[in-house]
Image (tube, rainbow, N blue to C red):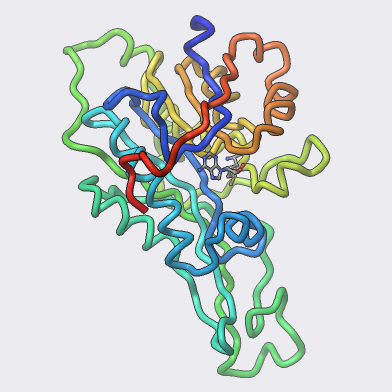
Length: 287
Ligand SMILES: C[S@@+](CC[C@H](N)C(=O)[O-])C[C@H]1O[C@@H](n2cnc3c(N)ncnc32)[C@H](O)[C@@H]1O
């Protein structure tokens, strides 16, 4: 277990991660609010982002910060799903995953082969509705069901370098059966357990198994891991379990109680900080 400041939760806005130095993070594991998914409409509306483009403009500001803070050879893993919606009478796909790939490529990161996370529960759709209806056996107006989410993986710069036989790297080893399972493209992992008042469902928490695999696959012991959309603190809990250092950002200050509850006795190892107000008018970050 590391020192207190090795685990930080910053209750603030990850569009401006002023608390983090350039090139100070080895791995990012995160899941942002998903544009055009009903669960997040209220969130984006309160920020006055109503269009698909403007919602991605919001996320792009965080991706720019992610790119700044990653070390050379550092990786970013982004869990995001596509969405379907009828707008102005036309039903269509909103391919969030491709927009995020474009954003990272514009920042100069390399897209690596990604993971398709299959959630076992989703039902087929008919004309954009929740389930197949009566005429669902007649062509051609039914739609393919979105039952996968993406875990996109990006690298900044070249490969990370280690000294030959680096002992920390060797102590971070995974097994052959872990490797065979984790490095295959389709993951079947059931959704997060609902623990506290269903909040995990309201903020679409991912199950611990997702960050657990990603952190073991793409970081070594003592590495610094960042989650800029911390939510209920799933990735923090896993980082503590796996002896990686960690910093997370969460805008909803009320999540602190839930995060503490989730960590139990381990929360004494975590420093909770409130981000000082940001003067957007003098910020260097463009919209
Ligand atoms: C999909 S949830 C993350 C769920 C998380 N993976 C978990 O397991 O609980 C996205 C979270 O990002 C937070 N958020 C959105 N924009 C943010 C920003 N600019 N800075 C910090 N947190 C943000 C939301 O309040 C929400 O809790």
